[in-house]
Length: 122
Length: 114
Image 1 (tube, rainbow over the protein chains, first blue to last red):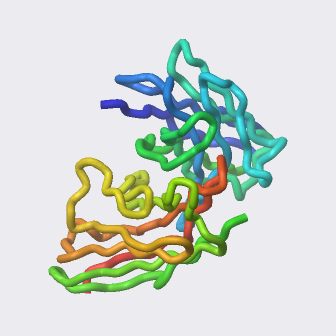
Image 2 (cartoon, rainbow over the protein chains, first blue to last red):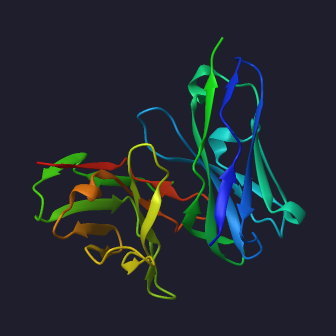
């Protein structure tokens, strides 16, 4: 059974960057997309962006365009998300999720990582 | 953007009773070419990631209890939990994936035991 293994918690200063990884254990990304979803404390779920690793081109929510970079390494079945110019309101749990797709059409998210807590504080 | 609105924001149900959560989209998520509703439901327990329960509005994910069922079409959808159990305490989210790649989530509905 595929699991998504995310990197550990991070504490960052405002203005810095953070890079979170998501590795597929027990399987590959081949036929799927990977989305990144964040959840601020006590809040709901917010889609940030995604990538279809075999195509390589990321997509971003307009809100995060220019500040978030999503990449994927097919050779290691690992996806990455980097957020730059961190602010206190970026404090959240960041999840990666495997997305069932049809060609380049994203469908539902069937497997989720456990989440990476990113705390932005001076 | 399609806006997803869930109701109620929270509900308390006695063990063994039914729980019903509604989800309304600001525009139809039904693809008439394949007659599929691009709507999923997720369950999130405290301290855990979301878990897929239902996709295509009514298809239960493998391994999910048959106490969970999804219904609806177009813009109005319902998640029903029959015979609520203590382990069903969670926040439930609907998500449309009609607009790709950015599927939007509802605000969530918190289910508690009365």
